[in-house]
Image (cartoon, rainbow, N blue to C red; front, side, top):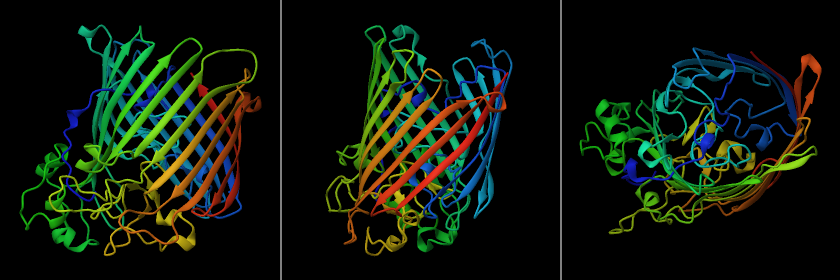
Length: 499
């Protein structure tokens, strides 16, 4: 974030569709408890894991292979969960063990949730995607895509959309407010997450047409760092309750050089970003159409739409007809562009809005918008560690910048997702992504731009083994100039028991 941001959170009005707002895997457990286990593994022609094996997997797939995987999950509900007017306590935990060149055990899911009528309070971590986007076949929601290991947090919000009574269901609101904790890194320790979102839905034509829109606001703030020198006086990044209020209301800190660095005074307390989203849904008995646009912002220039046409544009079509044959069930087509970034000049005197937004990078939080070595937002904005080895020294940004983690945030991506399904439960999924990678704003490396293709084909097949299971076979490939050329295979079997 290069310059100051003055986002007023309640500037939005339209919002997102059903389960597209919260979790990628909606928390829709309809039985008392559910147990899941999965065993599998993958290998590829290069040590780097293929892009579509590791992307949008909540940090559970290692960056290098080959590797085996064991996943065990349990979710249970307490109370009268079939009565929407009764309070329900829900707990869930999932552990994933990776066995390979580097073995580890992680918990992508570990939370307790209290659901009371239209509201939910939860503490822990769980799979989530935020923004107006197709969660199933998308290239990734702009600011929070399900690419990184979830953060631990405490969150209060609505359970989906809550109709506003006097509007007779025409207007419905979906909102949340959360405080979370980032895992400490070599550069910053004990930093926090501030998160809020407000969405609304307008239903017309007896619910067949719905308008959505809203805003997500994320900020990494606070903590300590000895690695960024004068940008953190005495090694301290502003972390008081007063600083928290400055983060929440997006206010500049006072000009106090004993407590705040020049970076804080010129910008904002914390690294702020998010998206302003709009969507249209058209539904009938045969099909469902969902058209969406996510507009990115990192400062006030983005809020004022000075970085147009940057953003994620998408169309999703769902086939709602049923027959006894294999059929195409869903098509998702997306285009992502982040080339503009409000221009390449940070400060041009009297101009109201500065440029060179440098998406996902920040001078204090030099690991960028990442958690546990993964991009939190769209996986097509990438770290230098994820590129080809000979591109790890990629130049870009200000000539005097340190080596920021995000080396490529100016991208154009065309993405196609396909889902086919048969009556016996067979599913075929294809993800095809073509990108052009330009590096960072202000200055660019003479080797850029570089083109890249990443693809995935996956078959999910019900089998009778172990009393009924699901076999998954997949192949993924990366070909181009940005990532290591690579082709890999995946094999796993999953068993789910619900009671």
